[in-house]
Each structure stands twice: as C-alpha cells, then as structure tokens.
Amino acid sequence: MDGVLCDSEPLWADARYAVAEALGSSITIDDFHAFYGSNTLQWSAGMAKLFNHPDPAHVARLTIDHLLNAYRNGAIRPIPSGIAALRRAAARGPVAVASGSPREVIGTVLEILGLSDVVREYVSCDEVASGKPHPDVYLEACRRIGTNPARSLAIEDSLAGARAGKAAGMTVILVPLEGAPTSAGADAYADVILTSLDQLPLTAGSASRSD
Image (cartoon, rainbow, N blue to C red; front, side):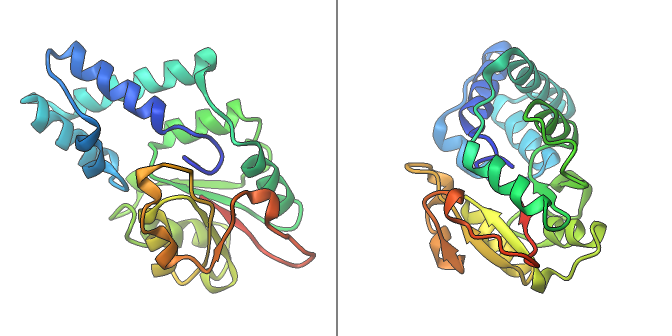
C-alpha cells in the first residue's frame, strides 16, 4: 500500500517528528531507516528507546493518531497508476493488500482512496509473526484469498517488500519511488521493474496482488 497506492513516507516522517517534539525529544531521517519493514511493536519500541520513553504503546498511539488525522484532513497523496492497476486486477480476480502499516491505517487509506469495494482482504504485518522482509504477511494475504503464492504477483516499491514477496515465492513487480531510500537495492529481488504501474499488463486470466 505505502509507496504503491499512496506516497505516505513523508506523512509517516511528519508523524514521527511531531511525536518526538511532543515528548520533548528528537528524531532524524537516519533513525527512520531502522524502522523500514518493521511492525508496530518493533518501530514503537525503537522510537520509545530513542526518546527514553517508558511506554512504546503510548508512542505508537500518538504516532498512528497523528497519521490518521493527516489522512482524514486531506494530506494523503494517492498514486493514480497504482490505484488504476489495482482496479484492473480486481476486475480479473481477488486482490489483497499486504502492508507494514497498522490495520486501522490500512482500512482508513482504502476508504479514503475509494478502494474498500475492490479489496477483499488486507493484512498488516502486526497480524503475523514477522514483518517484511520476512514472507509472513504475503503468505497470509494469499491464504485469505485462497491463492497459490507461486501464481500471484507482489507489487512493491521497497527493498523490504521485494524481499518479502520473493521469499513468499511470488513474482515480484517493482515500481521504485524515485529518490526513496526504501527502494535502494530492491532491483536485485525484482522479476520485473517498471517506472509506472500503467505499464503493467493484466491480461484475461492473470492474477495480481497489491502491496
């Protein structure tokens, strides 16, 4: 979802800066790198350690609430080519979203983007044993929509996501975000690299999954 259906990394950064300030601390862009692919328990524990705060759950709640408020107030940045590709895929078979975002964030984004009607299932890394780059979230997404990972596409923009899709045995379609540090090195795990999902052919009988 993040980086495929919407460009959300700047909003995550804003949320983390705001929480750091609210708690009388600070955080840098370099600190964010340690959070890529991690689930909520992992990144909130990392932030709490940086802030010397005793309650990671409180840090997580503040961060998620700030992000949700930004989304609901119109700050979300849709990626039209990703949304259009998801709709084309959904017209041919089931799609699932497999994301590192918390489940309530995924649901909110899908609602705002008008995709709740086409996404049958969505899975957060919080719902499985390990986040990306481990395959758990993709395997669970495939299980929920009853599809064989080997016959599915993982649409990704990041290194952690591409590794997760490859580890799940899926065909990895990489659409890197220009200049995004999360995309660095992802090409080594991609089966196909596109500059836009408008380039993704979805022929009759094909199956597609979206990150």
